[in-house]
Image 1 (cartoon, rainbow, N blue to C red):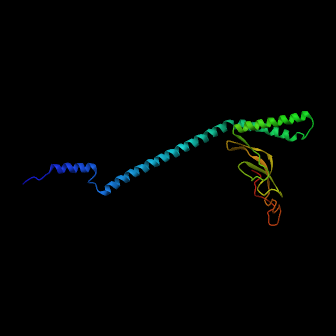
Image 2: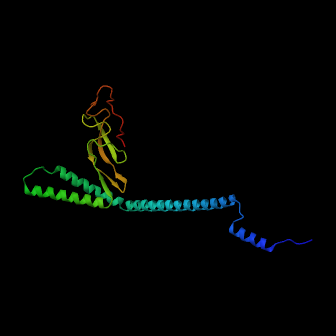
Image 3: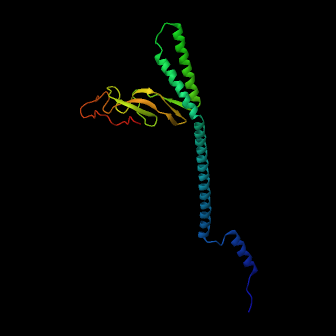
Length: 206
């Protein structure tokens, strides 16, 4: 029996196989799909790495602020009494006095208070002194009383007894305020028909 095996045919087949010429069309698509899947996988890993790095940075920043706030919180509380005394002295000083000595004293108190508040600000201690009409914020305000008002809407600050202070976003002393009772305001007026004159919407015992 004659052997019809052709060595040249085997060589051509090997070359075609290496070049992928004998591969079916589906094999090429599978190879492309595998490359795309690998690309998406690496892209997802890169996005996760960026997100993790950002979370780590934010956490480190928050922990650093917490550590700094804890370190100076007690010292800051002690200085608040100094700021309060300066404010009381300015409030008690005679206004419009012609006495040069009194004028110099008032000017000195004002400059001292300004310098102290600037030192507070530069160290992350922010003063909270809401004005009449500002919305009551239980995070930084403490309601000491409620009063009817014909000018301020109910639930808003009517008067500030004592300013508060926030240290790096953390309240170390809330501002003590008087809140306009429910039903207050220029439109309906406190005690208008249909309004609740009791105004029990704010907890003044906080």
